[in-house]
Image 1 (cartoon, protein in one colour):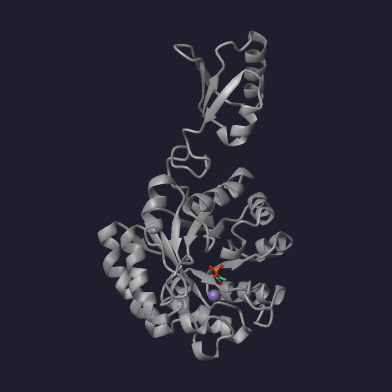
Image 2: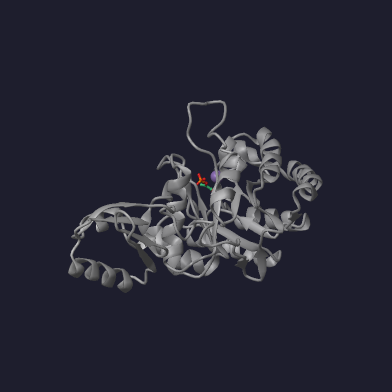
Length: 337
Ligand code: PEP
Ligand code: MN
């Protein structure tokens, strides 16, 4: 942050401003040639432009680093290792999270977990609290769904990724899950973000369907600011004029985010496309573009699925997908996890 001071700023005002900055833990320097300028080097996220403009003796203020300071590569140079139970998600790996859209029954989730774990998949997804567009659609099994998911994952030696749709769900979801998911509709539910930031499990944050990359990183900032640095970003498609797909997968968001943030970025081709025939090419594109992993919907009987059947792939399509990923991974120096 650059703060331009008035030429005639009084010594007392300058001293007060410096004291305030020190109280926030900011490091700064004053440059005197020409207009006096204050250059602040750290903790800029704590202070807004308006704060400076309201201080006596201040003429103007400009951000020279992004507002998402903690999510920025300038602050966190290395991608954080994310620990889900005893499994690390790190830059050397391409991590595949797979499972049904929703937990529907014990038989369904146990069968899917068993089959996926035989393919080497370590992360099981499944919604217990479902954020549905229609109030008449299946809303999920709630806590019972979490219990079934945990049981199925444990029986197959897998880790659980599941969504919390409100801040009051966070304690129970974080009790059963290894990674807490925040969905597209809640990307700017700031209370939920803060509550997720206060618990210790990693958080998979999906991009809001109408959010810019900057808004996405600012949402991550809410979690980071609470002290939880285990944040995984997930591009899941955005709303555009195009109707051929459910959303438009913004594949450019992957390299864009890699350039400006150190946080891992996953891709969800299922919600991005809404069509099972597109999951394979979009997954290949995600890996080739530098993504750190995938979140994919897999169902043993998609035609009877209680949610998102048309975008869910069956086990043989999933096997084909994994084989394709294994041929691409060495080209981008990743190992499939
Ligand atoms: C999901 O992953 O089950 C989900 C609801 O996704 P999104 O929030 O991206 O729509
Ligand atoms: Mn879904």
